Length: 303
Image (cartoon, rainbow, N blue to C red; front, side):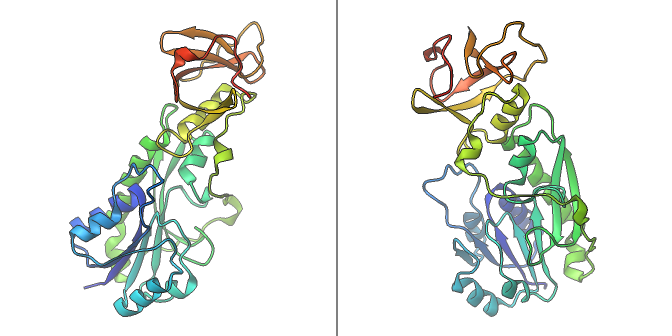
């Protein structure tokens, strides 16, 4: 039987590994990351799933850990599959499996190479995303494409909801291509470098709301990093970080009177209205990290 090793983490990693196990594929080793006690883990554990099936698990922060190479040299896998493993896998590992190494990426490559592709797609107001299985090469997400599955992004979709749909799309790709991967006949379609875009990992500063942006831009940020993603969209109010967790879909209505961006201009039951953009735009916030009632009318959500 074809010996397969899996590098996986997060929801997509768990979904793909689960399908491989249900398909009775010969998984001979799983490499994952140690669960971080400081991180809000909203996704199931890859390590736990593999351990339940008595598959050897190596949990390291980095594929460059000597234990990874040592284990792979002993296993001598035929194929390496990577599903949302967080670190680059070095060249000397990519050269081990004779049938190749393949990565599942959460975008329609060549767009949104790099980290957090789904979050960045939402921030930029994209209307479509998906999953791409590609050959692994030295450069991140630049290898030839095996297969893709697209999914629409609706105006109310959040990253939490879309991640589940990307996981479903990834599994559909595996269903179509697993036989070809094992036979060494998987498609290899070069990426169009002229259409490639790359984004790095998101940092805390990327989640800060700038109220001078439009309501739609702020809405896209809030849904791109919904709780329990860390950090959720936030603003600084009276010297403290205030998380903006949920909002109503923006209206195209324009305010006749202009207000300073960030000012609370109206309150209702379960919402506060905040001026944004040029002061004639607004966004209705429905959930904060504190009580909505505690935010006074007229105050400005900027330190």
